[in-house]
Amino acid sequence: MGTINVIDYVTISTTGNAADFGDLTRSHEGISSTASKTRGIFAGGHPSSDTIDYITIATTGNATDFGNLSGTRRLTGAVSDRSRGVFGGGISETNTIEYVTIDTTGNTTDFGDLTVARHGLVGVSGA
View (tube, rainbow, N blue to C red):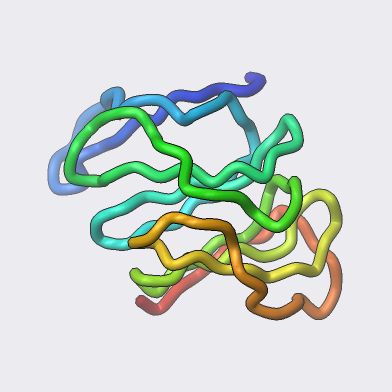
Protein backbone atom coordinates (compact mmCIF):
# COMPACT_ATOMS: atom_id res chain seq x y z
CA MET A 1 0.00 0.00 0.00
CA GLY A 2 2.90 2.38 0.63
CA THR A 3 3.11 5.32 2.98
CA ILE A 4 0.01 7.28 3.97
CA ASN A 5 -0.81 10.21 6.25
CA VAL A 6 -4.54 9.48 6.75
CA ILE A 7 -6.08 9.17 10.21
CA ASP A 8 -9.50 7.45 10.33
CA TYR A 9 -11.77 6.86 13.31
CA VAL A 10 -14.78 4.76 14.26
CA THR A 11 -17.37 5.35 16.95
CA ILE A 12 -17.07 2.17 18.99
CA SER A 13 -20.58 2.35 20.47
CA THR A 14 -22.13 2.06 16.98
CA THR A 15 -21.44 -0.12 13.96
CA GLY A 16 -20.43 1.43 10.66
CA ASN A 17 -17.58 2.45 8.44
CA ALA A 18 -14.58 4.53 9.43
CA ALA A 19 -14.63 8.30 8.85
CA ASP A 20 -11.82 10.74 8.17
CA PHE A 21 -10.25 12.26 11.30
CA GLY A 22 -7.40 14.25 9.73
CA ASP A 23 -3.81 13.74 8.60
CA LEU A 24 -0.45 12.94 10.20
CA THR A 25 2.31 15.53 9.77
CA ARG A 26 3.96 13.26 7.15
CA SER A 27 3.29 10.01 5.29
CA HIS A 28 4.42 6.83 7.08
CA GLU A 29 4.05 3.08 7.25
CA GLY A 30 4.90 0.91 10.24
CA ILE A 31 4.06 3.57 12.86
CA SER A 32 3.13 2.74 16.45
CA SER A 33 0.42 4.41 18.47
CA THR A 34 -0.83 4.75 22.01
CA ALA A 35 -3.20 7.11 23.83
CA SER A 36 -4.52 8.71 26.98
CA LYS A 37 -8.17 9.66 27.44
CA THR A 38 -7.52 12.96 25.66
CA ARG A 39 -4.61 12.44 23.22
CA GLY A 40 -3.55 9.95 20.61
CA ILE A 41 0.20 9.54 19.95
CA PHE A 42 1.79 8.22 16.72
CA ALA A 43 5.54 7.46 16.64
CA GLY A 44 8.22 6.42 14.17
CA GLY A 45 7.54 4.89 10.79
CA HIS A 46 9.07 4.40 7.40
CA PRO A 47 10.69 6.09 5.59
CA SER A 48 13.17 6.42 8.46
CA SER A 49 11.48 8.60 11.01
CA ASP A 50 11.90 9.61 14.62
CA THR A 51 8.76 11.76 14.46
CA ILE A 52 6.10 11.72 17.18
CA ASP A 53 2.71 13.30 16.33
CA TYR A 54 -0.37 13.79 18.49
CA ILE A 55 -4.06 14.41 18.06
CA THR A 56 -6.75 15.57 20.46
CA ILE A 57 -9.24 12.69 20.53
CA ALA A 58 -12.36 14.79 21.24
CA THR A 59 -11.99 16.85 18.06
CA THR A 60 -11.18 15.86 14.51
CA GLY A 61 -8.28 17.54 12.79
CA ASN A 62 -4.72 17.11 11.66
CA ALA A 63 -1.93 15.83 13.88
CA THR A 64 0.58 18.20 15.44
CA ASP A 65 4.30 17.63 16.10
CA PHE A 66 4.82 16.20 19.61
CA GLY A 67 8.59 15.58 19.68
CA ASN A 68 10.99 12.83 18.66
CA LEU A 69 12.04 9.27 19.46
CA SER A 70 15.71 8.83 20.42
CA GLY A 71 16.39 7.42 16.94
CA THR A 72 14.69 6.49 13.68
CA ARG A 73 12.62 3.31 13.87
CA ARG A 74 9.44 1.61 12.81
CA LEU A 75 7.38 -1.35 14.01
CA THR A 76 7.94 -0.60 17.70
CA GLY A 77 5.72 -1.94 20.45
CA ALA A 78 3.66 0.72 22.22
CA VAL A 79 1.64 0.75 25.47
CA SER A 80 0.33 3.37 27.87
CA ASP A 81 -1.07 3.73 31.35
CA ARG A 82 -3.10 6.77 30.24
CA SER A 83 -0.42 9.22 31.34
CA ARG A 84 2.83 7.72 30.01
CA GLY A 85 3.31 6.28 26.51
CA VAL A 86 6.07 3.65 26.22
CA PHE A 87 7.74 2.56 22.95
CA GLY A 88 10.08 -0.42 22.70
CA GLY A 89 12.27 -2.05 20.07
CA GLY A 90 11.68 -1.54 16.38
CA ILE A 91 13.54 -1.70 13.10
CA SER A 92 16.60 -0.52 13.28
CA GLU A 93 16.88 -3.66 15.43
CA THR A 94 17.13 -1.92 18.76
CA ASN A 95 16.56 -2.99 22.35
CA THR A 96 15.67 0.55 23.43
CA ILE A 97 12.60 1.26 25.59
CA GLU A 98 11.63 4.92 25.93
CA TYR A 99 8.64 6.94 27.12
CA VAL A 100 6.79 10.23 26.81
CA THR A 101 4.32 11.93 29.12
CA ILE A 102 1.25 12.01 26.88
CA ASP A 103 -0.30 15.24 28.15
CA THR A 104 2.86 17.27 27.51
CA THR A 105 4.90 17.52 24.33
CA GLY A 106 8.58 16.69 24.06
CA ASN A 107 11.13 14.07 23.16
CA THR A 108 11.30 10.59 24.64
CA THR A 109 13.17 9.73 27.83
CA ASP A 110 15.07 6.48 28.42
CA PHE A 111 12.94 3.83 30.18
CA GLY A 112 15.26 0.80 30.01
CA ASP A 113 16.14 -2.00 27.60
CA LEU A 114 14.52 -5.10 26.12
CA THR A 115 16.40 -8.35 26.75
CA VAL A 116 17.32 -8.47 23.04
CA ALA A 117 16.79 -6.23 20.00
CA ARG A 118 13.34 -6.85 18.44
CA HIS A 119 10.85 -5.38 15.99
CA GLY A 120 7.22 -5.99 15.11
CA LEU A 121 6.25 -5.98 18.77
CA VAL A 122 2.70 -5.84 20.09
CA GLY A 123 1.96 -4.02 23.34
CA VAL A 124 -0.61 -4.90 26.00
CA SER A 125 -1.60 -2.67 28.89
CA GLY A 126 -3.68 -3.19 31.99
CA ALA A 127 -4.71 0.46 32.17
